[in-house]
Length: 70
Image (cartoon, rainbow, N blue to C red):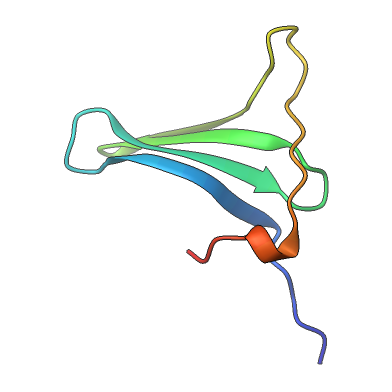
């Protein structure tokens, strides 16, 4: 069988569920390369595309070898 690759990979994580700031993740869609900012704090969470200074969506190339296991 063909190995099924992950659609989204976490390329960066910081923070702690124990702090009031919560956790911040940068997630990359492996099909499109679009990078998303995901924030979780307490019972709330949110996700949005990451934008550059010109307001364009950040595209990140992800190699299969650099994926993190979550």
